[in-house]
Length: 151
Ligand SMILES: [Zn+2]
Image (cartoon, rainbow, N blue to C red):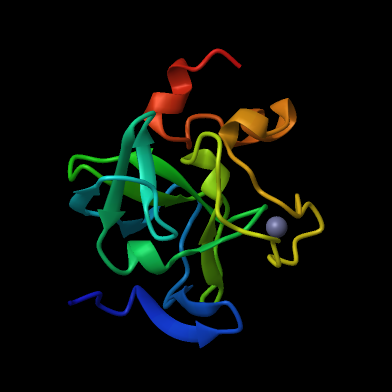
């Protein structure tokens, strides 16, 4: 897999993680996640793309860790997956993160979150349970299927 030098994968205390190999400006696509297959049900590695659709994305997308205040957001792409788009300027060497609650609707298999953010929600559960101000902060950078959900 050729990822160039834009990103690199490194071991963290949470398992492998994805890191910025260069500076990314807010709005840039950091990782393009391609759909590998459709899964019969949610797994700890799956990404939800509709109320009844869970998919596996390729690496490095599937290795991006969760944060309650992430530096990327998701955007549906032409490959049946998600692009991970910089929500802020990302310095070189930073871990790339996204918020599981911007794709998963009502269940997330994390017993307790250790993202370390001051805004940590401790037990992410899904978009359905996200506070309105957090939903507003993500704006368009959530799964398309969640945009039609009455909130
Ligand atoms: Zn957290």
